[in-house]
Image (cartoon, rainbow, N blue to C red; front, top):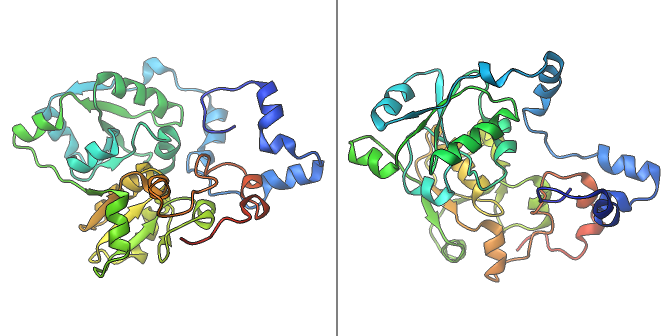
Length: 294
C-alpha cells in the first residue's frame, strides 16, 4: 500500500504497482530481492507472536508527571526519554539526551526500529491525548514499557530551572545558500538508499537515520553537520541520535528534500512517499530520466 491509512481490494488491484506485474516469477522477484533494511522490531515479531499477546491490564500505567517528578525519574540509567512533539518544537527546546521521533511522521516504524527494548520510557508530548495515542502505537511494535509522560510544556520545564538543549533548524533556502557558500560543513542525507539514489544534493553522504546508532563513528563530531531527509522528520531523529554521541554542531533541515525541490533547487524524489516499500518501485526503469545528483 501507499502512504495512507486504509484501502480496498478493488483499489489495490487497479492501482497497486505490485499487482500490475502479471508474470508470477517477476512478481516474486520484485518482492524478495534488494529489499530495504528491515526495522529492528521485525526480528522480534515471531517471538512475540509465538509467546502470545501481553494483556494490556498487566502493562505499566503511563503516569502524568510534573517537571520535578519527571526530572527525578529521568536520572534513572535504565530509562530513556522519547520526545514525540513536532520536530521544530524539539529543535527549539528539549530534555537533554532525548530520542526524537515526530508523532506526525512514520512514528511506530521508527520507534520499533531505534528505541532500546530493555529500558523504561518517559514521553514528552504536546498534550495528554498525544501521549496516550503514542502509547497505543508503541505497543503495536512491542514497546510496552512507557511509564510516564511530562505533564506540562517545555516553558514550564525551563521556568522551574530544569536544563534543556536545542538543535538549530534551517530552511531549504538557507541550506541552498550554505551549499553554495564557503563555510565548511558535512551534509548527511538520512533517507533510505533508494531515495538517495533517486535524487540528492551533490556531495551529500548517505547514512540512513537508524544506522547512525552505529555509523556515527564515520563522522567527525567537531565538524558542523547538517542532516536532511524527505521532510525533516527522520533528520530530526538522526540529530537526536548524533547528539547522544557527543555531536554538538548539528543542524536539521526543515522541509527536507521535498521542500528543497519545491523551492526549485533540485529534482523531486520519485519514491519519498513510501521509502520503505518493495523493490519493484525502485527499479532503474521506474526512475529513468531522474537525475542522481542535483
